[in-house]
Image (cartoon, rainbow, N blue to C red; front, side, top):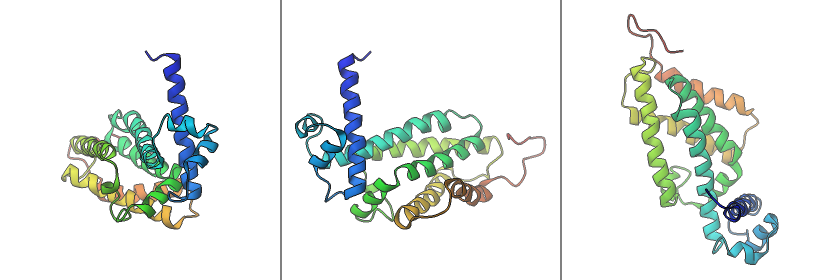
Length: 212
């Protein structure tokens, strides 16, 4: 169990990362300064350097924080959901909402990482890439479960996972770059419909009832 001092230090660390995300969004990576981030977090510059050695480390840590938040939501709402259709619906909602919540930072990331608009993964730090690889495995298991429940068409689960990643990443990247006036719920529904129309089983085998 962590001590009060350790909990306070972790809370300060989160405050700094939240402030860094705001400053990066407002100023862009190159124009943002450690001094601006410290001011936004209401800490001295010296205190900030007790947590992070430079702006570059802060930038990477913000990306890792965002990824960790997503992983926690994924564990609760997708991985732990036994019904494959509901799990996949939860995943699409989570992916779109996650991009929307951090769209400003993702826009900065896409602008500063060469080639990231086509494929952002190679630009991620290694720890984030490792979490992403684990995520792909877990999503593939959702598709495997759906095939076993006879609600998804029979196909390679990994390729279904990659196809879902393609449609969500491309949609989110477009929204981040160009903006949209569509309500969040409408965007979620369009991504869901585009994907589910393709993967849902036409009808279950004789004697097998659909799971939803």
